[in-house]
Image (tube, rainbow, N blue to C red; front, side, top):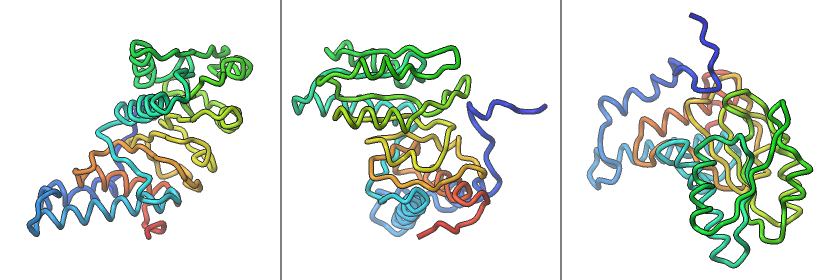
Amino acid sequence: MIYLDHAATTPVHPAVAEAMRPYLEDKFGNPSSLHRVGRIVRQAIDEAREVIASCLHADSSELIFTSGGTEADNLAVFGTAWAARERGMGNHVVTSSIEHHAVLDTCEFLEKMGFRVTYLPVNRHGEVDLDALEAALTDQTVLVSVMLGNNEVGTRQPIETIGSLVRERGAFFSYRRGTSHGPGVARLPDAAGRSDHHFRPQDQWTEGCGSPLCLPACSHRAPASWRIARAAAAGRHGKCGWDCRV
């Protein structure tokens, strides 16, 4: 069988599995515990966070580990929109009509909470209509959320252009990274979500962050934290090495 659905998920690299193994077997402690077994695991999670931050040229305090990609998207969209409305900035959210349901379902919930949501149309290639985006932005727009690369058809959105338009209008910008990667784009959003099972050795990591990055891995699970750290380090240099480690 030839597997061609890497946009949905990717196989675990042997080096990633090996990095996780100690925390699935011998180092099983609860990182919240005060005893030695727990402190060993807590230290491992903290080290993994530093590795990931180094690979992203980000500060470790900017990383938020979640239980999965859906929670990461929910946190970025709902958290940003709700906080902005609480500050009196507005109650309008913009997204695309072909977003992942983690974003679409969150936007539908926001509508029930009194937010106004605009769903942007796309062309036959799945690209967001930039004219429609510009027309949709108002002084009440608090957030624009658009997926970088579509998980079904693979279309890569013009994130750089979208980000610039949104910033010019004073709104927040977030996107779901999914399986798409590329230099520079992480400098644009106020929040972004990444899925660890989409990291690949060929992915390039030449980006700065400067904004919260939601990563699907529970903050108290060492195996998940090191899964991301090992995969990110491999992708940073196109190989399974620790060149980017702090």
